[in-house]
Length: 316
Image (cartoon, rainbow, N blue to C red; front, side, top):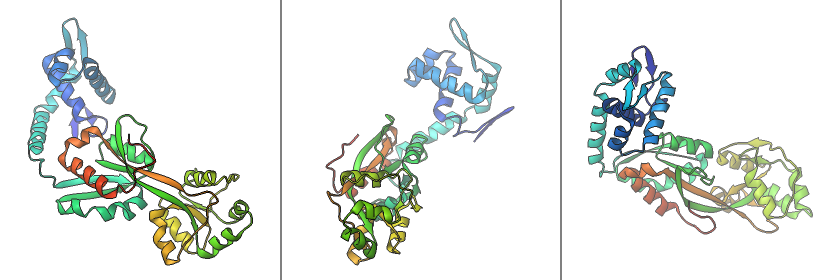
């Protein structure tokens, strides 16, 4: 955390190490172009870093001159406050990188709670035996992307395809999506003359109000239902499974979440008129994260151990 005399800057929120390094280099060289050469950045990138820092501070840092830039009094005070702290921090980081061939350390992973518990946790033993300390966080697709982009997590797992160009992803698991209920409810539905009408008469439990998994299953089976309000919404599908097992309602679940319960008789499949749908899970990261040997090793290990079926969805 960095406190700068009359103003308070919170390091790690509005400012970044990269912006501070850029500021120090421009301050030392008195030139945007000189700092760009030194940092191996483009001049627009350097200008963008300084502009972002000025927005965070609320003060101008440099005045444009014919032969470069002149620091303002705000820049003088900030540079004095930073002193050589940034150089010392970067030296420490460089030393750490030199030792990074040892993969031991903390790995931050974020993903859907049910996937983390039912799939990921079973595949962590090789990483744990290598000395990696795994820290698991839960979140939906947008939260996964945000935590990766902000640098809070190293790897993410999401059922939402990546659309942000700053993120990379690879398919890690494709699983079937099954319509399920308790055996008595499933029997009523399977024996009905009109499946859609019978399903609308039973309570629905769902992952979210958008009903994307359910809508996809209905569309695949040429069943067109009017807007249905779920009786239960939970963003951990294990909770939905528990409700179904108690004999209440129906839903759709990935096969990894319900096959054991179908085999044991706690749940039963609702026979689809056409067929089941698929759900695709992606392992996600930012490219710079793979510079860490630990993250690159974890990525390869998880892809190898979890990836059971790759047909049907492209890598990005």
